[in-house]
Amino acid sequence: QVQLMESGGGLVQPGGSLRLSCRAPRMILSVFSNTEMAWYRQAPGNQREFVAHITSDRSTKYGDSVKGRFTVSRDNGKRMVYLQMDSLRPEDTAVYYCNSKNEYNEFWGQGTQVTVSS
Image 1 (cartoon, rainbow, N blue to C red):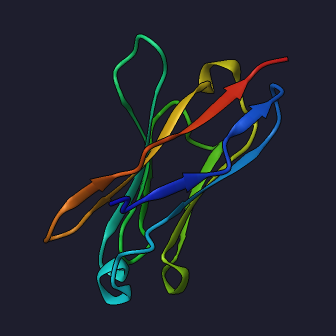
Image 2 (cartoon, rainbow, N blue to C red; image 1 turned 45 degrees about the horizontal axis):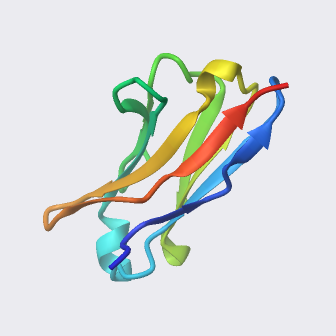
């Protein structure tokens, strides 16, 4: 059964913005609050690349290629994680995956396509 569900992908012009969402509908609220969440991406022919990470206490970390342009956040009450992507570039084109990790298990979402093109 699907544990993580991404949404918000689409086609956007260079310089534009998108906001991705990741929902964990089956995760117990208290567990989600203590779960580390992350975003990765994979472009055709490339390995999966780290994008952003947010801990249970909302500490964040970003990949070098997105620093200053992307912002990760979370809403524990809604079991949601977000990735705000600004100043998008064609090289940001990829399938974006949500990841969760805690003491019990690790899950991946099915991905959402982001295409940056004029």
